[in-house]
Amino acid sequence: MRPGDLLLITRAASVQFIRPIRCRLIRIDDRPTYDGWVWLEVYQLDARDRAVTRRSIFVRRAGVRPADPGHPPPQSATRRPAHATTARRP
Image (cartoon, rainbow, N blue to C red; front, side):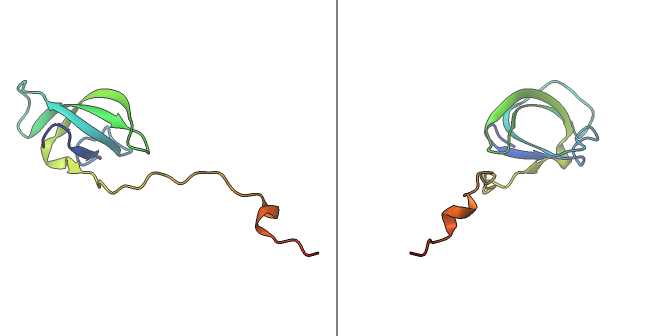
């Protein structure tokens, strides 16, 4: 793990993450912890990979996974009106 890495944090990292979060690593804190655990400073990301919250999280190093960098942004919820797709007859 290096600063700037895109990470996926799930229950494998800590039981507090019932819902997985995507985040970008800011830094690994060097304060002493339990064996195999680490404090991470991260930016939690929204569905479009924009930073929404800065967090300090305590996780098992073995449970932290790289996130898929090709994660597509969600599709727009806008739709065409039904009449826009039909052709008019003379």
